[in-house]
Structures are given as structure tokens and as C-alpha cells.
Image (cartoon, rainbow, N blue to C red; front, side, top):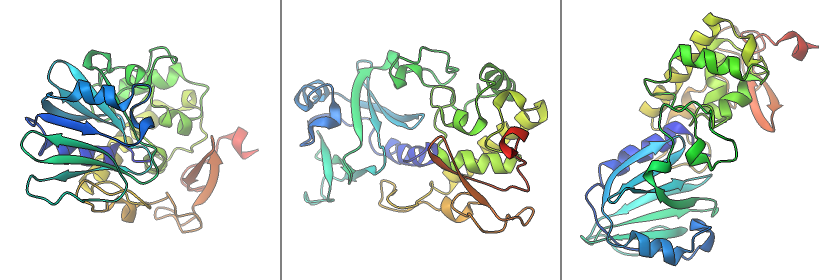
Length: 294
């Protein structure tokens, strides 16, 4: 699933193309794309609306519309967008699940091979702010209860330490993946950040010392920023809006490198399964907690 760097790459590209364009039509032949609202109702609500901005929140692409509404898009595993200039031919990509038509003759296609992507139109005031801390009720929809943005000014080492103390009995790797705590981090970048900070993925959050929290804070931001510079990671299906692959996969130090020597200490990278997800770490650089070691 695209994580923060991939969604940020897509969002930045769309932000140079879409603001100011008026939606003249929206169509989809995939009924589940906009559930629980039917596609026809979403199309009626979008008609005539102007896209004011495109931004990212966690792993969601956010189309900011006039009138205060936002269209939230979750790309899931294989979703992406393709912009169609006004003079471009109409056939376009395969696996197009939705089409936006704009008043100037251009358009935007939502392409999704596996039909897992979703769109929802909501009041923009319902979307949690970047400085939220994952304190909202877990029963709320994700866009209302999303956690703190790790690249925002509000994501400080002090806040992170307090957050980890509140969730002290949770293992650090699954906690980093909890979108209601910290938004946007996924399996790839959690593994990379934990290696960079020298923290084993099974360490309890409350066991981290102040210096370890500081390293983790810096590592998360460093890894995410580097991945954004390289336009994300392409492991299988991910492409940006131009159909191009990312480059961060060539920079991985542990993810997907089980059995290879660690670039820091030479020990072989290990693969384990934590919370149902493949996890990669170095047994030499990231010492296991005693409970895990036993």
C-alpha cells in the first residue's frame, strides 16, 4: 500500500495541475468506489465544484473543494491518477475506475487494477488536523481520528515521548503503523526508521529512553523526507501520476533484504512477522528485548 512518501509525491504532482479547475462531470462503473454513498449522488454533489487545492493527510489524497467539502481518496494497493490534457485522446489507461471531466476539456482518471481504492466526500471540518495526537475515539472514521503528521512542526520529540508513554505496553513497530497515533507511516518506512535508530521492532514503547526516542524521531523524519525526494518506493505496482516508478527501493537498508549483510555491522538481516506484517531488522544493531530473546 502506498505510504506517506508515495501519496505525497502524487499529491504534489496533482497540486500543480488541478487547482482552479471546475468539475463538469464525474463517472464510475465501480459501485463500491464511493460507498456508502452511490456514485450518482457523489457525481451530483461534485458537479460544478471548483478544486481549490490538493493536499495530503496521512495516506489520503485530499481534494479541497469550494463550499468547504473535501473529496478524500484512499489509493489502497494499486490506485493512482492520470491527468488528461484537453487535447489528449480519450482512450487513456486500462483499469480506469473513475473519471473526472473538467470544464476546460481536460480530465483526471482514477486507475486501480485491483479495485481496492475508495473515495468519500465529506465536510472539510471533519478531517482531523495535522496536530492531533491520536486521542479521539477509536470508533470514529479514520479521517476524523487520524493521528499526528510526522513531518509537521507539531511532531516533536517531546510529543513523541509523551505519546509512547501513553501507549507504553505496545510494541513499537505496530504502534508506528497505527494511523490513529501517527499518520502516514507504513510497513516499509517503519522498518527503515527503526533500523536507523537502532531500536528492535518488539521493544515496548514505554521502555524507550529519552535518547532513543530522540533518535527515533529524527529517523522517522529523515527516512520519510529521503523517500519523498526519490518519489517513493516501487515494489510492484506503485507508479506516480506520470506513470513513473519511485527510487527509494534502491536505498533500503533492511526492508526486503533478509539474509543480506547489514551495512552497519555486517550481521545478516532477519525477517520476522509481527502483527501479521513482514518485519526486517538487524539482530546485531537492533538488540532484542529480553522477553523477545527468550
